[in-house]
Image (cartoon, rainbow, N blue to C red; front, side, top):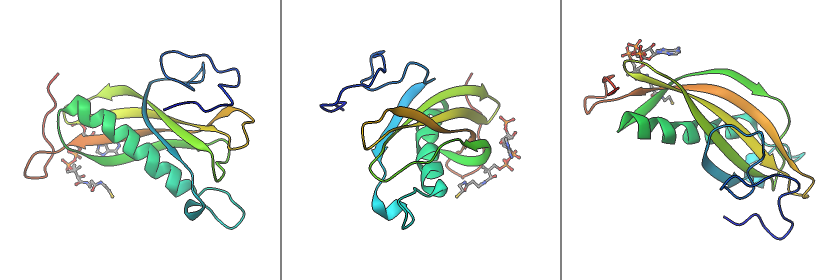
Amino acid sequence: MSDGPAGNHGAELHGVPGRPDDAHGELMLRTFAFPADANPAGDIFGGWLLGQMDIAGASLARRRAHGRVATVAVAQMSFKLPVFVGDEVSCYCTISHVGNTSVTVEVEAWARRHDDSGTVKVTDGHFTYVALGADRRARSIAK
Ligand SMILES: CC(C)(COP(=O)(O)OP(=O)(O)OC[C@H]1O[C@@H](n2cnc3c(N)ncnc32)[C@H](O)[C@@H]1OP(=O)(O)O)[C@@H](O)C(=O)NCCC(=O)NCCS
């Protein structure tokens, strides 16, 4: 995806357009915050952002688990700054732990402001996913 005509606002490129220098992990999701996801003042609901981060983390966990996963826990969520309507939201993911049946992913959410005032880290959290078999029960993950 293009970073748009206004450029990166000081963010250095590391192979991913618009990636901030201090973002950690792989870009797994990029989307925009729409008015339907906000309160009347234009602040995006925390639940919307949590959902985007969950999807991003699940994508990486699914790849590591080689199949279907389910979210079993969300921990250490920290909403540092608000997200506003029109912000471009990017989720960067890192696998922090692989257990017998579970994968834990650290997810950082960054917002490129709709008014081109910069790109800031808004939220991070730890998402744990369990690999599921066809019977919907936990299955072992290959090391
Ligand atoms: C996922 C599910 C099948 C696991 O059931 P289970 O086999 O009884 O779960 P267990 O207690 O054996 O835990 C399985 C793994 O998850 C981990 N886990 C469970 N609860 C956890 C928690 N609160 N925090 C971190 N890890 C957790 C366990 O440590 C274990 O990991 P490991 O095998 O790598 O050591 C079951 O919990 C489930 O279906 N949950 C609902 C999932 C879902 O629908 N998510 C979407 C919600 S809308």
